[in-house]
Length: 147
Length: 81
Image 1 (cartoon, rainbow over the protein chains, first blue to last red):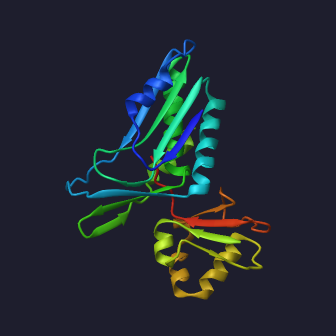
Image 2 (image 1 turned 30 degrees about the horizontal axis):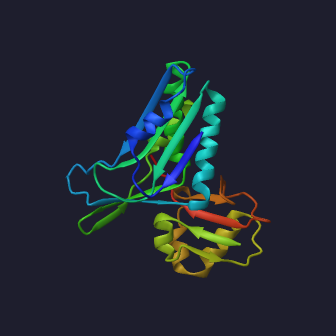
């Protein structure tokens, strides 16, 4: 299990390669990457991500440990950035390794659903003179009930 | 104890953290005490359904006890991922 909360960008290819390498007992690797999406109007200057330093690592470790317990997984990787990003930047990634693909897919979805509503990150969108906190979506909270 | 504020709660109150001496027994008691202090707190805590709370970095409820707590944090629903 590897959990990284960091400001600098990460190398998605290198992280995925390292995560996947040498696992002869794993038949499936699933990765998910979150990317800063521009606004529909196309004028997002920056996405600022705030987090709660003491709690973030702990919350992510708890979510990952729960995934390891619920599915047959060989490993879990979570990387989540904070700070200022621009459209196209990678915000975060999740990777799961499992002997079988169903566990890898389901655990990755579980991790994403929990991470969206239970890990202490907040996004603020800056465009021109406007700076608005992104509101949590009811669908994200509702997504937790399926687990 | 230390009381921490994040995202728009921090902006509305105007500070990221403060040290508070209180005899409040629950999060709700603490919120009531803070709201009576100053209109900024009153505005920030006006709608508790729009807020989440963590005691010593674990998510909890507003009726949870804060006795013995070192750190209480208030923030809006999370938007990670």
